[in-house]
Amino acid sequence: MSNTPATRDYGRPFRANWLARSGWLIALLYTLYAANLLDISWERFIVGLDNGAKFLGEMVPPNFSRWKLLIENLIETIEIAIIASAFGVLFSLPVGLFAARNLMPGWITWPFRTFIALCRSFHPVIFAILFVKAVGFGPLAGILTLIFASIGFIGKLFAEAVEEISLKPVEALRATGAPFMSVIIYGVLPQVLNRFIGFSSYQLDANLRNSTMVGIVGAGGIGGTLFSAFQRFDYDFLAAILISIIALVMVSEYISAQVKKVFQ
Image (cartoon, rainbow, N blue to C red):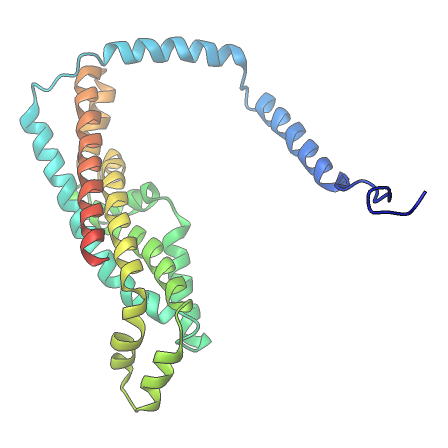
């Protein structure tokens, strides 16, 4: 028989990766072990479904009778998110620039990268607890919390976006003797402006959601009212609060989409 391509023995086209299979098996076994250790069982899940159904039943119909309180808290939440986003974006711009390794020497980038890492190290609720302890209950603690959260997110992404730019315009401006700010304004920002606007609009959405969460620990906004409704078992008013938060986030998403269209 001729040794044609149709009759050659090429062996198994896809060889078994026993190392990967062993890894998946170990992960599965550890998951089962951890579930047993944490007392996670199918019986508890079934009971939880029944309790969840009763809880949802008590939320219907939503109670909007205290709409004035609802509106006041929503306005405060919006104010916290907008102020925190504005200052967070303002501070993130120089932090991201100084953290970019293709523009700055290492002795400058590492302190700013460390600061960004610190801002990203803790959940906003942890920052909220710290600031509530420092400045007391109210919107100021929420604003400071979300400013740090914004710097951690936008600063990191902006630094990475700057590191991906083409350096040809930057080198051309430097060759003409342009000052540092002119290099940034005319050589760097035009290449990352659209991405920076996208980061900022997303962070505004995130701050609207996070402002409801940090309010649970006393950092202002509608979160405090939400937590109080939980404590009073006032589930119909709780449903009204949740519906209002969902509507607020959807409106914010629509506005963000329109802003992106303008700058595209």
